[in-house]
Amino acid sequence: MSTVICITNQKGGVGKTTTAVNLSFYLAKDKFKTLIIDFDPQGNATSGLGIDKSDLSATMTEVVLGKANLSDVICETKFKNLYIAPTTPELANAEVEMTSLSNKFVQLKTAISAVEDQYDYIIIDSPPSLSLLTVNGMIAAHYLILPVQTEFYALEGVAQLLDSMSLIKKAMNPNLRLLGVVATMYDKRTSLSGEVFEEIKKYFKDKTFQTTIPRNVRVAEAPSHGVPVGNYDKFSKGAKAYKEFAREVEQRTGKK
Image 1: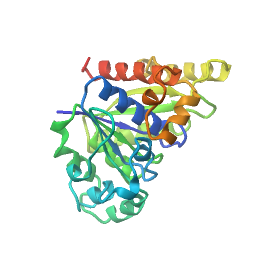
Image 2: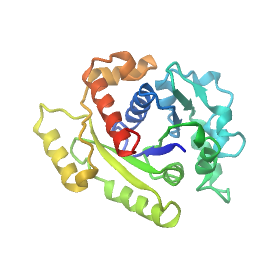
Image 3: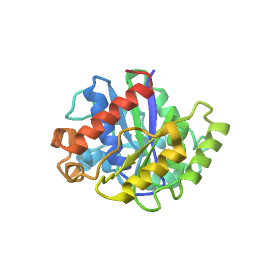
């Protein structure tokens, strides 16, 4: 059985997709067969792994509407052990259609159940909102990873997200757990980053990952080349941080 992790934060611009892509890349590098499900209508994980959206005949849109199986849309990437279930902006329209379905909250969980014995890890990149898609991701997952930007207002909205997690855990997914909170866009040259990281540790205690993801130009450049930062510049600070972060995830999920 695979370990299913939903990466989520209702705030945009916190490095959610970047974390999903680079975590998946390093899990695959560590010889874990990994599937990343692009569940954000922006489709940035899809393009960030070099997939041409114009070539896709079926995506997560068809999966959540019951028109295709998850196995039908999964693509190989150029990286060994790493696969992606791609998305296009049409997923936003599909979310509206999903509201009329009787099983609208478990569409993703049902889709994943048919393939989860084929992967070691399944990483869900959810949208930056508490939407029906995000709820589907939480219900389908075993764990949540919460990227939090080390900037002012970093923890704003986090309490609401944790409340939603608690409700979903109580009502529909009793096994859901917070795997941890990862501090992103960390700049050790500024006192603010350090202060926010201390606040994160104070709030989340041992749920805070030890690894911090630095603000790094190589991390920002890599998606435009359709590759993770570990392929773009494996010696960069960002690549080294995501490699360490992946090892922490492996330890916390009992696979290392």
